[in-house]
Length: 90
Image 1: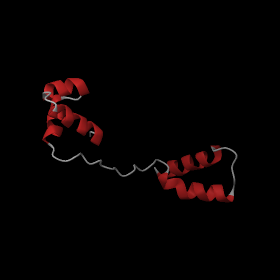
Image 2 (image 1 turned 135 degrees about the horizontal axis):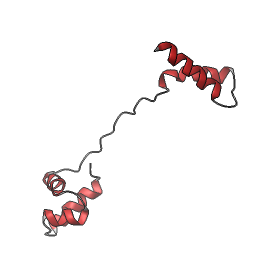
Image 3 (image 1 turned 120 degrees about the vertical axis):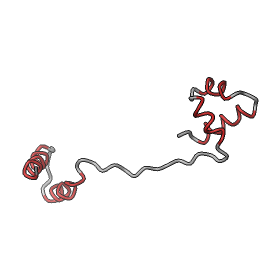
Image 4 (image 1 turned 60 degrees about the vertical axis):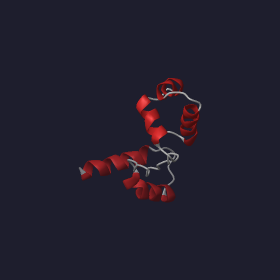
């Protein structure tokens, strides 16, 4: 997905008389990409993707509870406890 500035650059080069092949060479985009965005009448919209779930998401309430009740100097104890929970659930 091109940024609005890149789309404007492609359209500006085209209005200056450059061919789509020359624009592709100058910008580094494929000719098909240049043609696609030359045919668009409006600027491309940025699509936001939802965040991916993390591996520790199922254990976050447990970890937070442990941190609040028993401060730990390093993460070895919660880590080993989570590994034990994982092995029991499999």
